[in-house]
Image (cartoon, rainbow, N blue to C red):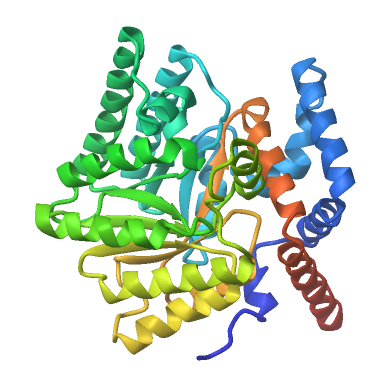
Length: 390
């Protein structure tokens, strides 16, 4: 397999020298765990106190990891990405909502994003989190088979209607919707609801995509069981494949509550499960459409080799690579340059509303030292290349 991810000229072609310097500073800060914790605490305080820091946040961390404050504000970034054949997945990243009016507002934002995607072919997917449309506690009670009160039943029915409204619109526009995975103690309810949406809207192709976090050791088992049900009921599976985002929280809760840890024993086991799941999906691509969300070079090379082995075109519409905006450009842009389908998750929303996402992203990156070290290596290498060229 041709090694392509070391080409920094292609990877960082869209970044100015200033943007490379800014990225270096941000990733150096992220490598310092204590600094991330202090910065997260300070950021939460100043935003809660309504101190005038939004402009500073926007020109630094926000502009590096986010596309803008609205769909229209993202257009310049969307077009820049597409100039290098990289698509955008607009992700309204306001988190931590708890009120019905807020959930209704998120639904409307997703529908607005679908309207934007309908008129902009550079945006082939939209995305949302289950708890963007309803309270975490309701999903948890459904997962744990705890009887809902009358009011909670009404809440759940409203959540189902919100899912259905979005999926129906996505189906009408032929624009797939990626539904994120969350914590294990609420995920069964989300999985069951998403499966119902798949059965309803995925008859001809995958419009509704669920997400597998394969740092959970049971996820390939779940996928195989879902595959059997899909074949029996006659629907396609759409699946985004990621390693996962809540490991420390998952381990801590399992220990505190005395149940089996749902997380793989170590990173090697997680990597193996990711790759085994990817192989299963490619082998069954007629039934399962794939959005491979990964910042891992080996898994990316594996998918490239699986496509070649199975005589699948690099740009087959059923298979996509995905990375987060502001990260792993050496993977994204080198893949697109070789004619693979690539999309960047492009978070957007008001600065204050998106800060919980940015804080979580910084905390996750600080716990994955190899990822941040690789980002810094790529940035340094490109700066040196540009100096030699000038």
